[in-house]
Image 1: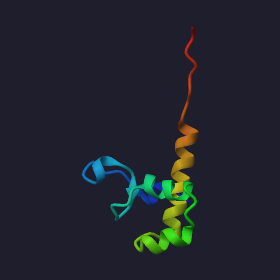
Image 2 (image 1 turned 135 degrees about the horizontal axis):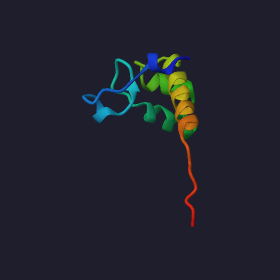
Image 3 (image 1 turned 90 degrees about the horizontal axis):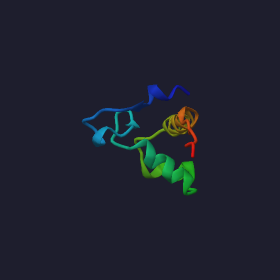
Length: 76
């Protein structure tokens, strides 16, 4: 899943937060719902504009961010 095809960042939408392209649904919302244990079927039912591919794109986006994060220890 190529997340950039489904996740968009526009400063005019939700203050520039990543959203599902063509919606005002934040990727972070989808990830929070999944992390809270909400089933995919329930998310899709509650947000009819979403597709399974959108949910997978959010997961792919989160994976990308986790891989990009670098922690550098502070020397004492």
